[in-house]
Length: 184
Image (cartoon, rainbow, N blue to C red; front, side, top):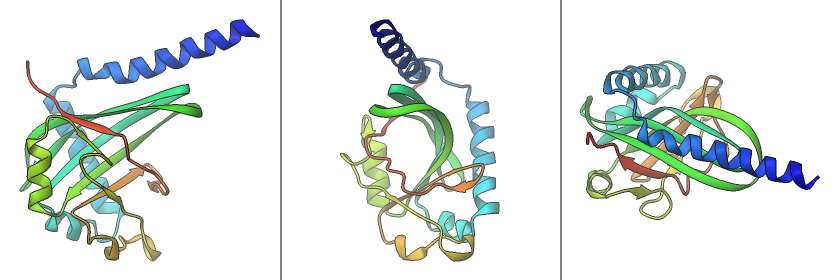
């Protein structure tokens, strides 16, 4: 029994380190660009009102693939790009760790929209930005008919989290650390 416990702890730690360790293995910019374009296209196609939200954006941070996994101890990691005026301004990674009742893995897409220039400027000047500490991010849900509930767009920063089945509900992004990927 004790042997299984230590194997489970080791496996969970390995999963968390493997996911977080992806930071050292940054994807090539071309791959990130392709995935970002696909995520934005899917967002525009599948979510009513997405085009209007993106048109209002001062900047859009797109993470086309965030993988999460763990057994007791978990981690998540993804890479993406900040788009300003339709052009990529910089590449970023997002990472988070968690402890608690969890088993398995999942993947998702995440789009963070900066609707306020001051919020975008603060984000760009930060050296590592943590959701819930450095800024509050409102996670937007979809209203009736699969359209964005525009009443939730009164915050400086809003986020959309979705997978291949549509927008995800009741998801907190707090504790996610976002850092610029530098070409060293």
